[in-house]
Amino acid sequence: MHNRCLHCEREVEEKFCPNCGQKTSTHRYSLKHFLLHDVMHGVLHLDKGFFYTLKELFTRPGHSIREYVQGKRAKHFNFFTFIFLVISIGHFIGSFAEVKQTNIMGYVSENKDILTEFEKVSKANPKLFILIQIPFVALFSLLFFRRSKQNYTEHLILNTYKASAEILIMIAVALIAALFKGSSTADLLYQTGAVLSLLYAIWFYYQYFSSFGYSKTGLFFRSLLTALFIALLIAFINSFVLGVKAGFEDAR
Image (cartoon, rainbow, N blue to C red; front, side, top):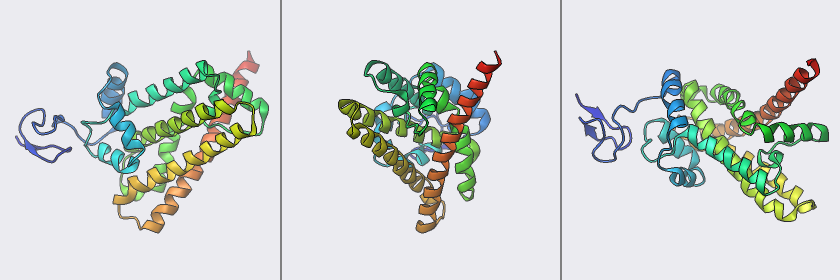
């Protein structure tokens, strides 16, 4: 039986493409495949391609991840492993470089009590606030870009990569801001980092969905609105999680 390699589109009969090395069993994502294969594979294995994926996320993020979702996966680092590694890097830097988790994770609030509680909880559970957001973020991008016919699992994956890149942006900003600790320059840098993350999200969505028949103007405004709504959603989710935690503690 002949198969077509989704990475290089060569006709092959073997289990692996002789041209690029990708498995010929590679197929479209589904929830079953996501849970039984990719999550377990992400936990138990480290794929090749971390620096390739890193480069792609900051040169052609949407195009590259769309190609990954559609089947060109031989060169990319597994999305599940990638975000766990990025979160771990952020936690390590936060622990040893005297950088707050609130700054690395881009959480902003005018309420100092909320910031203090967020810092305490996120430092103890660095993966919690990131991973709990992605299913909700994926639902929003699914609604805004439903004409693309990307399924929910594919939105989970593209938003996992996007979240990873945004964390890396905030890590870089936090490291620079640490040189100006306690000054107005540091505060300005963190605000700049938040803006950069928002702009990155717009760029990411614009590129990813550019091949699904949207007009350039419509695509830009969809990308902008999605990024803005998601920023508000993340702030709400973080506050909600903190509220639930406080409620459990008060009930003890």
